[in-house]
Image (cartoon, rainbow, N blue to C red; front, side, top):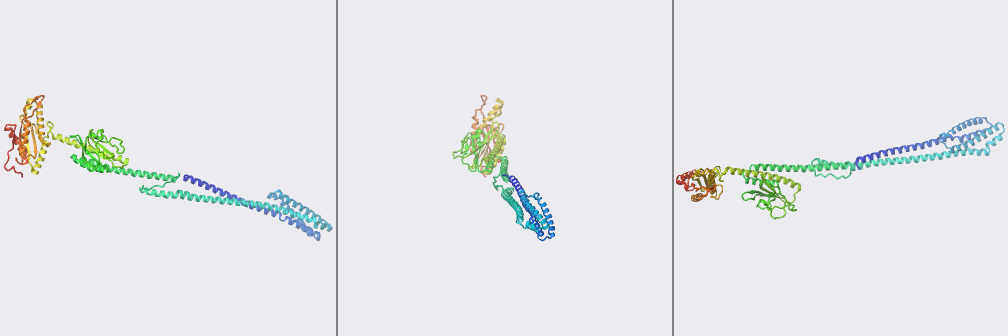
Length: 603
């Protein structure tokens, strides 16, 4: 029951009990008034009837005194007493108005009747005495009959007074009992009112209000201090205190939820800061190795307890190759075909649940136990260029796992974008450094490679050879067969040069029909042998254009070797001078640069 209802009922009961107590007190006071009225009425009746018997006796004495002494003063006194007796009779006639009932008045009338009879006897005796008949007068006043009449008057008066006493006693007793009962009821009502008041004070104020409010106040104080570990007391009763407890419980739950959301927001802000910092680092990478180092450093911070690997697509072998790993993953091979991963097949995140196996596991996973995995493809323009692989820890809440998966997808998006940018930049660099016709490196790439090889040869003191090549009579092919035929010859010669060395990237087309081979580590004898092999392979070329053989192709070669033919930074000019000599001496030959004095010894 609600406190307002209890309070209203208690207030109403208190008012009713107070009214009842007041009413009983008024009734008790009325009963006491009745008691006093009965006593006052009895006093009034006593006052009206108390002198009646005495007056009768005084009249008798006066009459007897006259009969004996013949003294006239007795007659005077008798007449005076007789007049007073008549006034008493007049007062008794008003007893009915004062409350006497008929039975009482009947007794009183009988007493007056006998008093009147005595009065007649007295007057008859006085007249006899006045007439000188003393004997008759004495006989009347002192006879037995007169005495009996006196006794009758006394008896009737006594009877009247007895009846009055009985009625008065009954009235007083009834009034006293009624007053006592009403006082007792008033006291009981006051006691109940006091008990009700104490009950309200103890049960409602202390038990139902004070104690719960003190407990709730402590909880509210702790909650106000952001101490959401404070557990609100459980008050199941349906009242204002219960409503307050429920409101505080809801406030605490909201505070806990707000605290949880703030923690999630802080974690999310931290993760986004990490992702932003990682993205900045990825944008500053100059090579794939730089990107791999950034991924290896940041990924364990963004996804702690999630071991994994970064795979990059090797286009040449069409294989997914591990670039780096973190936190020691237990499954997934280091290399596999793209078709072995369902994430790469479908182009979206693939997450088979290891314990329930609600989806198909990827083929690149080793059979090492039921570990839940996450595969996220790295795509650029619809093409898979890599893969992020993660292994889920054993016990992770579903909401935390969902948040982590969002971070992982953002991570994969940033890594994929950075990797695509690096590949695009490498492709553009390759395009800028390659000759479109022959596929060999161009003059720009040659200048950078020559500078690097010269520096390395001088630093390591190792031999370094440079072979300059020029196609003989190349203009003849353009003039006789057209520029398409000349391009076919250039492509054929470029293919020979590209296949003449084990290392890639050391055959160049400088422009027109001029080519160069850089051979780091080749001494003069090895360089001459390789130059003759290349010259012979060019001579044996069979180049056809539109079904027509273009004729023999030959080339002139100029060879210079460091340190045999001078400083490394002049090796190209030395080889170019040897090439001019080869063309002057008849073409289709290898001319070696002149060996300078003292240049054969390595410093």
